[in-house]
Length: 93
Image 1 (cartoon, one colour):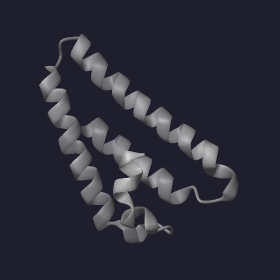
Image 2 (cartoon, helix red, strand yellow):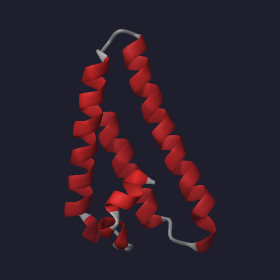
Image 3 (cartoon, one colour):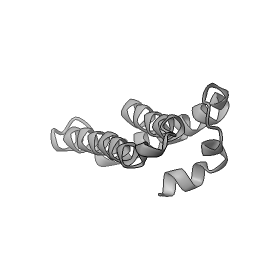
Image 4 (cartoon, helix red, strand yellow):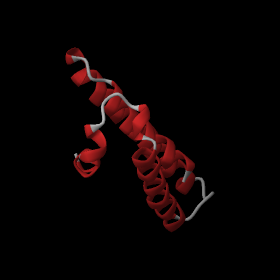
C-alpha cells in the first residue's frame, strides 16, 4: 500500500510540476519509471511469497485511493491546478 501511495502521489506531483515546454518526454519517462518500480516491487513481494496476490491488489487499490484523496485535499501547494480537475484523465492515460 505504501508503495502505491508514494508512486501515485509522485506521478501526480510530476504531472503538476513539470510544466515547462521541454518537459513532455521527460515527464512521461519519469512517470513510467516510477510505475515500473512499483509494479516490480509488487511482483517481487508476490514471487518471494511475502504476500498473496489479493493482498497486493487490495493494497494497490487502497493506496491509490489515499493518494488521490491526498492530492485533491492538498492541491493548493501546486502551481498547476488543472491536474486535480482532470484527475480521472491523468489516471486513465
